[in-house]
Amino acid sequence: MIPAVERQPDKVASDFYYWAKLLAGKFIVNVVVYGDESTTHDLSSKEIGAAVLAGYGGFADDWVNFCGSWQKTLNDYLGHVEVRKRIFHFWEFSDKKNSSNDPNWPYYGWSEGRRDDFLYKLAAVAGSRVRIPFASAFRLAYFNNDSDIKDKLREIGLTDAQINGSNIKYISLFAEFFEAFLMELNFRHPNFSDSISFVFDDRKDRDWAIAGYDVHCLFKERDKRFIGSPTFGNTFDYIPLQAADMMAYRAHQLWENAHKAQKEDLEISKLDFALWGNFRDENEFGNYVFRLFCRNALFESGKAKQPLPTRTSLVHAPWRLTP
Image 1 (cartoon, rainbow, N blue to C red):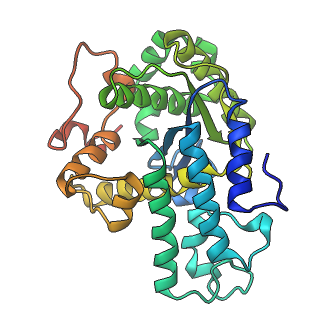
Image 2: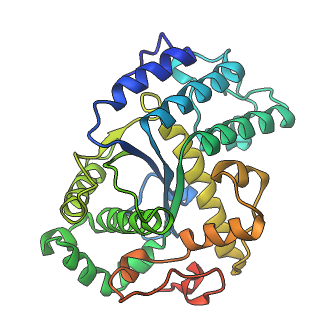
């Protein structure tokens, strides 16, 4: 991948272009998963409220333009940081409580104004340089306690050994993600015919990767646009995953805030508009995000011609999905 000693924007962009050409698909989707803060690194926990898979899809040229602009922003603001650590993780950026007195924290001594400028510039790069943002929220306890999920997974083609194994939540997450991604892609771009490759954060978890490969293989049999195998990478080598990280972290915050408030009006911020791209107004944007967060594609895909839920459809509100 991109050498650590050469992180100039033009070099980063050109190196990513040559790497992207090695992928089988023309359209590249970069995805990161976030869970509740207490269990982000343990999706098997029974206490986790929701996990969010979120990211962006774009063609190679889109990602080349993105990489150059993203790296330039990192260099402009984090030039004092060791090159290998000059990356963006939203959890690290947000950790003012534990890190604000640590001189080694990349954001040590920053004013609120500088923090806001940095964050909005990154969000603007992500929202303007790639084609399709998306996110899906999954209530894991709901998956764990509803027997219908296993029936649907069998319909997809998973074996009983896979369904009843310890990897059930990872498998469910990937199955739901691919269903939701295809629903949204077909909804927004019904004539989309290009080949698609996926890049996920590796999480340093073998079971996570195995679940991704297994479920992707089944969807590839159903949809010929899926080609090759998913790539699992880290956010330093695969720079677009840093934008997916920002999207997933903020998407999880939106889901969590709505869930705690038990209301359907999502509190949309300036950052959200930058991350998700251009919408005519807050209502249009809110409806779009609500559709992504508050549905269960895995169940809906088996229903005959059911329209996509609207923002006012209470049955799809995540806090109604109680086990």
